[in-house]
Length: 169
Length: 177
Image 1 (cartoon, each protein chain N blue to C red):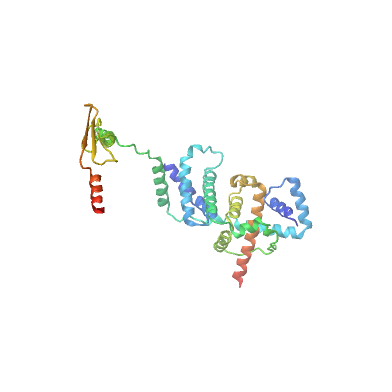
Image 2 (spheres, rainbow over the protein chains, first blue to last red; image 1 turned 90 degrees about the horizontal axis):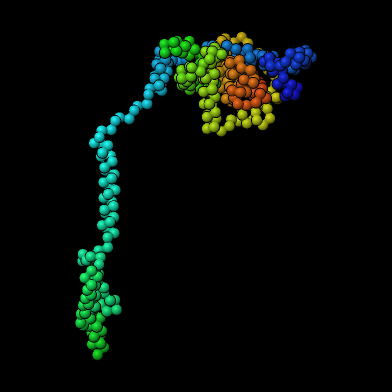
């Protein structure tokens, strides 16, 4: 018996075949003992299962089970809690704190990036030191239109050279 | 709400039994039947009375069980049994059980044996059997519920029945030894 024939037999048992096809299967069953045996086995299984669920009981009391269902329904149906109204002071504080922080950051940024000289000179003033001659300092004040140059003699490097010459001598 | 409580009291055992038949786990069956009742309350307006209330609420619990079983299946590897079914249909080679393996058994013992046998089936086979035998669904209705073809339903039902017959026969043999 092939698989399709087995499934057709099952469909016959389950009342899923059209009338003409069902009568064909009835004829076949009368001739084929193997098919009849298989049908019998399938029928026994169906009978064994019949009414088997009837003895199964919910292992919780009626009251307890209902209380759980009711509680869950009430939880789901409860309106979502509205956010509590924010007091005016708290609202102001909520806005002012970040604004103050931002303002402080801006001020700090401006102060830190402001170009000022080491001795508190205005940006219009600057001091230059000639690298080639460390004994010469130039002071320029653009606002006053003044330039001052200090020359120290003997220059440090000149003294060093002299000292060196002395040693050679 | 009082009327709904009465409905719960009237149908709670049947709903739980259906969940238990599908899940084979008491705790899960209780949780899913509770969930079905909550869903039933939420969808009460959708109940048109085309079927009985019992049928309607049973379909809700069946769908919840199916969702749960699919989730569980995704989490664990395929059973050897399911693989063997896919690879060639062992049910075709099973010898026919000629003697009724449940004949003469008391109701309690029969239930115990069927319980054990059902527990050894994969969820797909067990579900097809439950939907056909307990819910009395037709092939096409089972196919729609499970999201598969009618051919698959027929094949799964055939395998489940044959496997159940063999398992019950084995239990009978063990008992007689």
